[in-house]
Image (cartoon, rainbow, N blue to C red):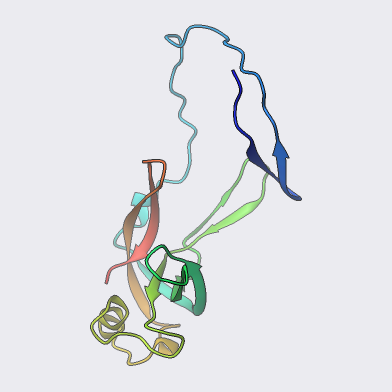
Length: 154
């Protein structure tokens, strides 16, 4: 059986590989689930966390003509640090992306304004140093699975 070309990420970037054969290795009825650990993000829901930074970014978007959307990324201080399989430390933070109308403005009826009001500030530049409540958020992936991450109560 021929498998189409795919990419495998490596430390130095992306390495393209061609796989041309697949070998059947046996019955799947013996497969068992393995608890791989991970970080239980539910333990952070409802906790207060200090906002560390606000950054303006451009992210891909399928909802705009240009294919890009300007956003503000509001990010907390790290709530925990975990290690990956190679021993690298990864900081886990709460964050939210807020859409901007354009590079200089935001909607007074949108999610960002609601968050600013909740934080009792009038401008995004005043968010760092304020405290927000963490909430678990789920995002659907294109492959049908969901990704859980830490956001803020808005």
